[in-house]
Image (spheres, rainbow, N blue to C red):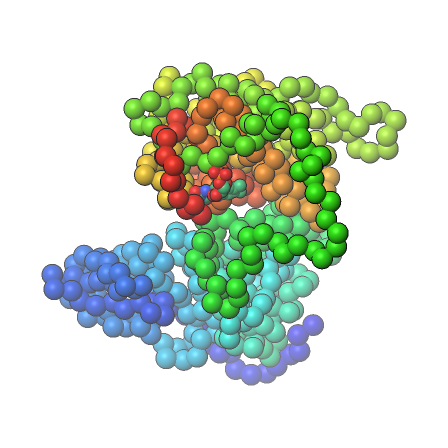
Length: 481
Ligand SMILES: Cc1cc2nc3c(=O)[nH]c(=O)nc-3n(C[C@H](O)[C@H](O)[C@H](O)COP(=O)(O)O)c2cc1C
């Protein structure tokens, strides 16, 4: 337990919004305000004289969440949408930072709700502290923000929260950093309140039944190896290319004796081996001749339709029974957790829109979604492919994670990604046989998918994408990823 102290209470900590390092905010020639960052200038329009005069304050921080100045709040909101702000928690405008909050998602704004003194709080089992460069950071795949820890008292308090404690209990500690911090961490789901009767392990007390099934490393891997829930650099940016040479394309041979297989491999290639050789990625699609609904139906029917349903394992085996819905591709434990969602731009016979492939009924079901999100999803794929236009149809593979993690621990998410590869090649080969163009897309935005479907990122989430359509012939399509 924390030790008691008789020191006078510290003044409450407050939030200040400040520009990220390397960002400047200046008055422009038109009398408005512009932010300069990464060699870009973005104009934010005109503001009243008071707000314009306070532009320089953004370098150290303007009070956030207390100011009733609507114009200033609007400027903060716009800067935040561009990811240009961080928020410092301090007891005085020029005082030392307790923590600095780095938003990881565009629509994040810190919230400090009042917390009852008797409210019990515990650290999320998904939260962790690590060194990042010269900083200590507290993060969680559930959180929309990352917390840079600037004062040892914060780390000390976190250490007290491996078990649930009330605010009252925490407050008596000599190193109590303030209820404001608890409130921010609670808002970010780094802390949570265990329900009544929660056991000491706390696993079942945090979140919903779907969260119970996630291992720590799996949820972290899912949120950090996709777009949408973090602000880390990602993509083909050669970030560490200057530190290490690229391994050769072909592994140097082992020194042992070699058995030349060409002398044995003399039969002509089979139809399947020929199909494998013909498969290639297509990134440019023929605008005048879109793929047809009949082709989409044939592709999905051949590659992903449910072909049988049974209960497994046999009655005499001593394992819980699972219902299995088999499809044309293999799946570890016959989990078959992958669902297909189609973002359709152009398809003859099928209206532009977002659809779920109901693999049992072999039917497409329209999902009403925001037009901007549909466009964003298609344009993200275009960007990832370095393609001249959006794909005619973009298939998102979404995993119903619980189908795998209900049974498997330790490697559930890895298994899901293996299944993505298996299904991706199945779709590639089916498309090749049908002479339809296809191109895998390496990374998708899991938050965008969550918004479009209304499904939480840990329940049924985007794990892979493949673009399809009628390809245009090109001998020099770039390797864009
Ligand atoms: C998992 C996976 C992710 C890929 N991601 C992308 C991508 O984001 N953008 C892209 O243009 N190509 C992507 N590709 C396609 C590869 O660039 C392509 O397969 C590779 O260059 C070999 O060319 P080929 O498919 O024409 O044989 C991906 C392929 C795989 C298997």
